[in-house]
Image (cartoon, rainbow, N blue to C red; front, side):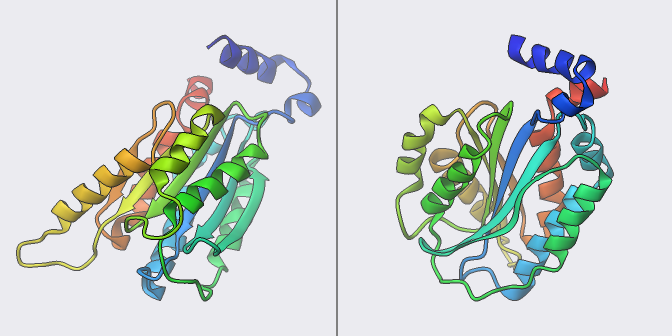
Length: 238
């Protein structure tokens, strides 16, 4: 708490050039593009992220402290040897920076990705990216996924190796789009959410957000970002 208060005071009293070097939060966003995600679902995921980043409430939080901005990074993951960086570390210092990120994502096209769901590898890759931002006050990995890991290291074991890293990992569990007579979607999303809670999330205030299908992805990501980015920025706004 003392460290947070110190940086808030610095944001007010240190010259803009010096304060600008501060990073309020590093947020790495990992998107699932494994074989279970078709082209339509891929587009819903990418466009849903763009919509969430530009939601008025999310934008307000992102831009709340330009002297100590949030830095964003976005990557795709699937099999153990198949990850792709979409947006490198970008400080969201103003509306122009946010629009540049949004434009890059909107223009991204689905590439050929290897089948399989290497969730443990995705966690490790995200943690490696966050290691590049060690000076940020808070470091968060935001992983979306529509299934359990079936290749590579078990997520639980990767999490054990990351316990001393002081990062937070949150998850967005994506359920099935298809309706059914008995509508097992709620059962399935409950099972997947429990899996992410038991195997993936870690750190202070970590949580699992759920989306009932890719159609609900934009709304779920919006709620997730509002929760992830709250805290220091909210205090500043108040």
